[in-house]
Amino acid sequence: MRSSKPLGVAAMAAAAALTLTACGGGDSGGEGGGESTAGGSGESVRIGIKYDQPGLGYRDGDEYTGFDVDVAEYVAGELGYSEDQIEWVESPSANRENMLANDQVDMIFATYSITDARKETVDFAGPYFVAGQDLLVREDDSSIQGPEDLEGKNLCSVTGSTSAQKVKDDHPGANLVEQPGYADCLTALESGQVDAVTTDDIILAGLASTDANQGKFKVVGNTFSEERYGVGLPKGSDRCQAVNDAITKMIEEGAWEEAVTENTEGADYEYNRELNPPTPEPCA
Image 1 (cartoon, rainbow, N blue to C red):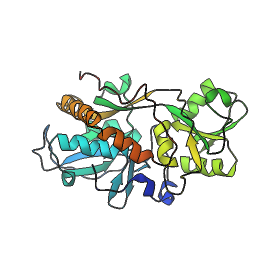
Image 2: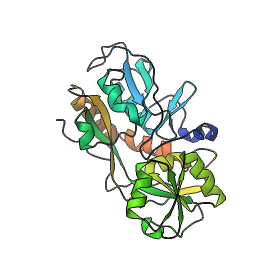
Image 3: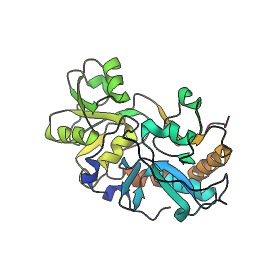
Image 4: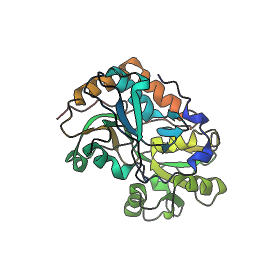
């Protein structure tokens, strides 16, 4: 499916720079353009991903790995592009709509939740995964089975994230400890300063699957939100149905399951099988 190595072998040192929000975050960035069309006749296709999310979208030198990367490569292949025709472009959360509107990218696979507000400015194909806010705890901790067990517990999330805000709104009994990034939260969790870390379940699984963290943490597996990860497209794009068809084919062939398993291996993670694999929504 891809030539790059699984995220489980990415160095945890690189993950220490993480400053993710619940669905990612960071400063502006990216690389130049290239010509592409609805099919594969263009010279290249510019695909936006995250560069700092182990297990989802991660850059290590010239290698790009993660579940988002795997799905993007599969879809691009179905559109007629070979892997060497893909131009990866860093797409931080705050810049995604502008990057699509300004023709900086052709598609975005970057833990990009489908929302009505975003649909006003961009189109979506998918979803290709349905995530949910969850909890990461130490491997030997059985006292926290879900958000109802957070009363009096120290819970870490990233400052300004939607995950942190949801805890404040819905679980005020938890002692929320906010950190600049999830790498800081993992350090606090390992040392016992906090009892759990929260963000989207598959993001937590990616963090726990790195070589440095395998066997230390586990995802609780009791989600308490719903995030439908879609493929961001420019408004009015003619690619939506072709992308949906590719996602459906990836699921039916078993490549989707393989990608999820590979990129969360070692994280003691089970995705929500009631919501996944998802059925792509009809194109507008």
